Image (cartoon, rainbow, N blue to C red):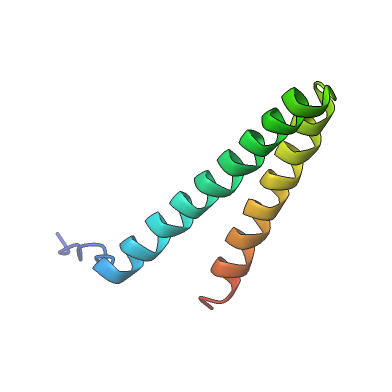
Length: 73
């Protein structure tokens, strides 16, 4: 039987980098939703500010992830 080689281990710096990207995504979306809710309560725009800002937050977070992953190559 041929011996199988173990899969390569990910370095700690890559793990830290990608967990940092995940945290950055969480913070970006969370702050945009919080700001939308705050604006809705302050100006009575419910639910439009929350909807628009949460979508913008998701798009911004996805852009950050794509930019980060594409710079790895």
